[in-house]
Amino acid sequence: MSFVNYHSKEINCKIVYYGPGLGGKTTNIQYVYQKVSGDQKGQIISLNTENERTLFFDFLPLDLGEIRGFRTRFHLYTVPGQVFYEASRKLILRGVDGIIFVADSQVEKMEANLESLAGLEKNLTEQGYDIRTVPLVMQWNKQDLPNTSSEEELQKQLNKWNFPAYSACARTGQGVFESLKMVSKMVLMNLKGGLSTSPFA
Amino acid sequence: MNWENQFKKFFAQEGLELSGCNIFIFREDGIPMYGVYKNLDRNAVGALMAGSWQAANALSGFIQGSKEEIFRFSFDTAERGIYILPFSIKKTAFLLGVIFQGQVNPGLIKSKMRQMLERLLQHVEKIKEETPMPQREKFLFDEISDREIDRLFSFERK
Image (cartoon, rainbow over all chains, first blue to last red):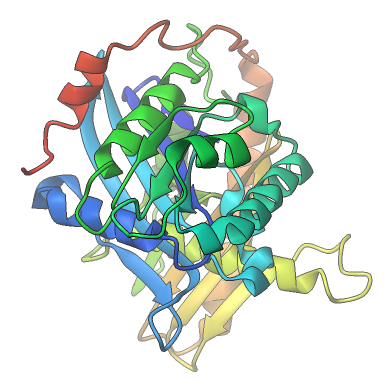
């Protein structure tokens, strides 16, 4: 859940990259890290297995600057994509404000995408969220590879809710910031406001 | 008045007598609320403390009959380590954590932390009685333009 500090005018939000294993979630966050200047990014943390697969999460804090007088900080997390890390995925989804679902566009990965998406919906429901009301962006990653499903097919199979969707190649950066900007906008517009200054908000 | 200020106020009154210790408060999702960070990245500490806590807490679910108990997280040697205590205020879960080193008696640090948490909760109770609960039904921003978002992301190096 986002945290808005009205006194110091700060907003903190949590964005999670979700999707099947080897779909490009970590590559997304690494690309963002490379493109952000030193004083606006914090340390990137990756809790990996020995063979460089995400074991628990990757984490990148971003200090974005101000919007209408509010200093905005986004905390980017990835979940481990491998099927048997379901328990970790549930933990990382806690308090999520926005999600980028990174789908692997390769034809043979459609089953894995569907399974991951079903898991996401189930995990959100278990935590009291309705997927239809969570700020969510679809990213059709690996569109540069030869054997990919068309965007129409991905849309039909994976996006019955009609969330904003972007074609991407996280390796080169195509679609990475477009997805992040869109989910950021949705998250910020979803923040609850009000005028009270109680410390217990 | 706000969370961070309340925690700050409390620790100012309290006076941090625990030398060799870095004390922090985070929300359960890792967002830093208070802390003294000497050569430490606050966001990294938050994410890792919250991750450690959540993983340990989930694991404790496998222990029969553990649901009613309040667990603490401890990871230490005879002189240095990490200690995390959970607490909640109005359904928001927080973590009070300490990273300590060069201690002769880590058990004493943990005991002091537990006492500190008790006093913190008393402090919060007192404020709660004096402060009405707010209603936050409206959205903070009605509409955000693409231009505003582009400005927010203007750091992106081409």
